[in-house]
Image (cartoon, rainbow, N blue to C red; front, side, top):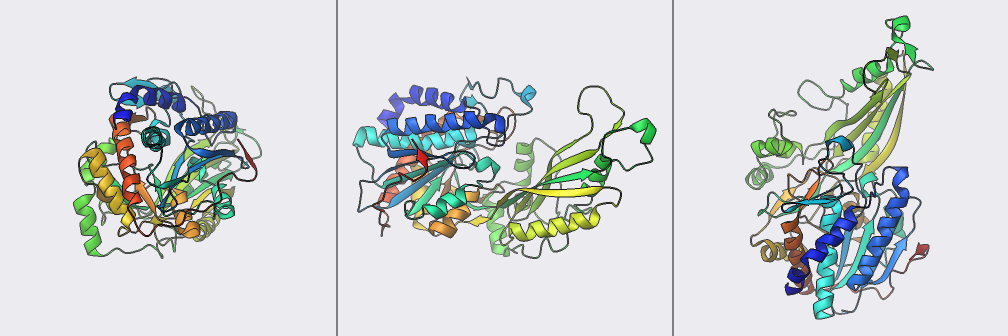
Length: 469
């Protein structure tokens, strides 16, 4: 840790450079920025001492892989992270430009500072610190950093399926989740799945003058809002028939444990900066956001969006819809239910079309796995206290992929804080968590190195076909 302490300034300066890349995976206009970010990350991995560093091309955004495999009698850790970020809009609400990172006090502000560049950086710097001081690691390591997590990781399944042997590991670890507070570390043991849809409603062939045609034709924007208003009943329950058929019912013992260890209603409302809750009254807010599914409307477009008014009936309107799914819901099955519901509830005066933009399976982590014990000990070393086990309402597609195709558990060892404003303007990363996170990642490797029996480290490297370095 002496190395880490003496290089803190450089670590932060490099992280600022990392965050300055506008690697917004959802926007084609930032495709070149995303590629440049991948190349920059690859160079930093080489400088840290990793080997076989490769930038792998995909149909959209690159995957960066690297490894260090000189401990044949030790377990192998697969480190995952993502370097792509969410769009920064509305940029007018940022105190400083989203891709001109700024340090204010103990926080680094910028889009992606926390999700996931700052948290990923803790692992990279832990590897560098270990290799620079000890010249070797206590485990074998394989790194997999992708550029499409924020848009559903659509090219990752093909990559993992094609390179299963090269990705063989004893355990996977990622830092892309939240703690409960600055001194309250948490290990996440469940994630909700996801389904992203775009619902478009079309009416007249062109925009119409609202004075000449208002009251005579059905406004597509109004029709869309009428449809959206029927997604939930008065109690906040999703009104699509069959939607809850596979939702798992958790025993009272587990719900009591969640009430003891998870955030309370007041804490969640405070983090959301709102006063009144909404949703299924028979469940706590923590339960509603973790073990219950949700349907949210993330955006509406249609008609005039500029300043002032414009007397127009738009020809079309679109809603972006996100569904968070829980075990044992399947996104493909839910998609069919939603499509059928929309078809039956589309007014005859308009037409509708549904486009699928993302599917991801829910994931559960075996809390009895020795790797979670290793992570708990690592947190105790890095933060001075033991972590609690929590559930997350978020979606990370790769966790289920690792379970299904690599047969490897994933340790969700996050360093984000509830007020880090992930996906919102003025996103930040608490820099003390970077330093503590590096210490935690170092200790995690040491603890996993003591695990037995280890999975054999595959002799083949990660220099993959179709790659460009």
